[in-house]
Length: 293
Image (cartoon, rainbow, N blue to C red; front, side, top):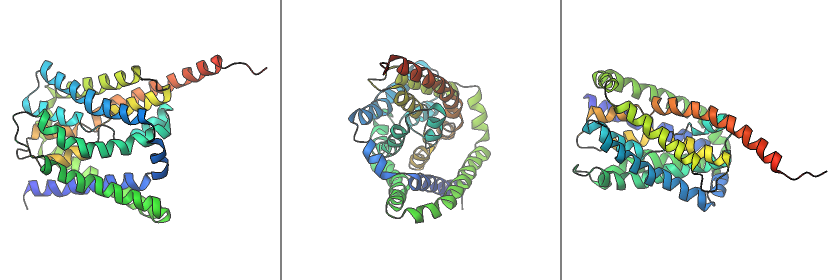
């Protein structure tokens, strides 16, 4: 068995277990209720798949990125919202109902839009839409939907399964990251002296602050939830799609590997900042409320 086959197996385990874990936690009824907000749906799609990719394209034009790093940044821009955004939202005192709706919406939108937009953004690279969509449908959407259905129809079963699936997700994540680090160590080291990490930092920080400042009528808790969603990236769809690329350049893989640590370095300080702003927003709201005495 060659290294590419081993890597493909690890990606399958990583993606399926992480999506299954998310599905087993999902409160489908509350999520569907929150998704009735047209503003939430439109703004998530706008920031995630219009402004985000456009900003990524701009960065590839103004920063001296290598071709693999530039292509990696484009795919990176098409997979917003990591499952850890719920943890961040709690720390930021964000609107949790809003957050709970954004996460599954982003997962479904990623499965639909990433394979459609990737060939369009990567002009000159020969890519087949179906070859990109197939791993997303099988490895991302299918386990998410099946486990969300188990949670909705057989909650006690989901509660029993969740600890084991969560543990497997953690182990498969460590195994996948460890494999990539060991066998692509030189390429990872090369990124330190390049603009690859800086490009991801600029992208995440710029998109998060823009979505927070330009709220389009969202309140502070909703704006902070949206900003944190845009400041995080979901590595599972990126790696699933990478296995379908005809030329699996290590430089592009490194950009996907950075989708864990780089967003964390951006999002956790932002969550603390948003938490402080939540207190200010609450105080201003109470001060503006008419007195009942």
